[in-house]
Length: 102
Image 1 (cartoon, one colour):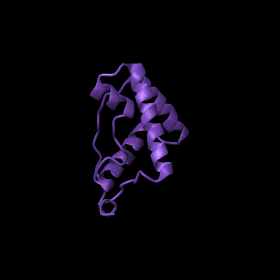
Image 2 (image 1 turned 180 degrees about the vertical axis):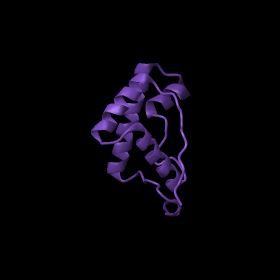
Image 3 (image 1 turned 90 degrees about the horizontal axis):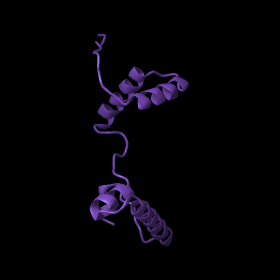
Image 4 (image 1 turned 180 degrees about the horizontal axis):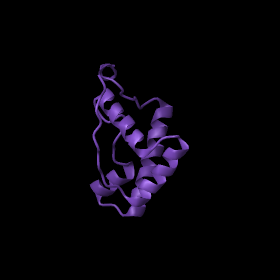
């Protein structure tokens, strides 16, 4: 049985549309095909198939009312501390419920 299609209308920033169209064209795709691919992955994963999160800088800025310059410094410091902890073996990555039991 053939599936039917529906029209999906949305608004995006014109600059974003122009840039994404250029990139999609290089990949041999168009915006409609990309949206279909993205929605297919959303359904397949039963959620957004990539991490959606606030940047470290934005979190620090909002949480501690930092200036833009201080946000960047705080984010850099956090990444440095995280890298240091990973190298020292004191930071564990949690990827599943089983990791929590260790």
